[in-house]
Length: 496
Image (cartoon, rainbow, N blue to C red; front, top):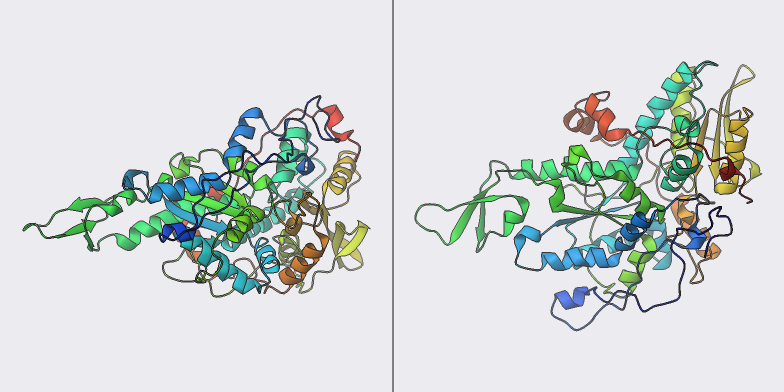
């Protein structure tokens, strides 16, 4: 069986099935943890459906298909169950990071404000045994800030001999995978090298956060009763003279990345592919930044079958005991807002123009819009947003013919943007739930907007974690390179 858009004789994607025999029954409820009766109903395995097809041939290998099938609620509960057992060597610190586009889905689904939804989700996850719940907004800060600098550099270097523009965004894993696996060079040369928020969040959690946990304990004595429960964090036990019932413990070695199990809650299935594609990072001692991705819909299913009356909790931050008081987002109608922020930055840096309101103009359809900056009657900046693969294909065809007039394009695989990711706002039949999506768009629009870099901790992170804004470590942690495959002549002949 294959997708109608696929050019292969046999599609390598998972087929959609109504077979419920393979659903997971391994998920214990929070009620069970407290010794009460109750259990989760069977939870669906993660699948990439044919309806999620990115219209690229050979986009999911057989090996990746197996790995994708393991990224589901069963993997999450496997780690939760391991943490309940006495073998502390197998314990993990469970960290969940939530994408901002997922919160409107929970708010709409459970009829809550977005702040209430954030606290309800956080409280529920912690009732299951999750240790920390973050949002990915600060990782998006890094992604946007690095993209801003790269665009200005490309604009200044662009010439007929060295064509560095247009710059195409790199935050959407579906689009990036399509560019790498199908389009190849010269298209990948136009991809921004800044890593996506998910990739950066993985490094923040498994590198910066892990080190901070160690630093907080270094030099301080911890008194605990009983066995070495903290050995899971790599802490050594020192028995004081006199044989006290309490054991004095001090931190001697780092909380290593492999002791953290990092889960991303995201609106689309392509984030699962992105987690696999990250590979083992040298800076994380061979560990992947993201161990598992669960879609908003998968988490909502767990919540519906659990105890929604648990105590709400405030989102954690990476900075000690500080909490995230309010939910914020970046300036994008349904995305992380790379276009708006990069446009403002470029207008100021390149033309000394202050742009407060970014005005979008729909062209071919509502998912292809442009933003321009004029100076002295001349258009000096021309940006576009291209969402969905029909618009992406048109963009690529014009780019290859040299008839594409844009300096920058925010590219997203999903028509309607990230809010319309197939991991949320879907009917049981797998179609977009338009009523729910409209409600989510209204909720998302009301979330306060933050400027990238406005966090008081950003400069601290650049200096203390990355050793400077333009340091080799910042380049390694915040930027990536792309695979280049030979262009396949038929890949753009797909009928949309």
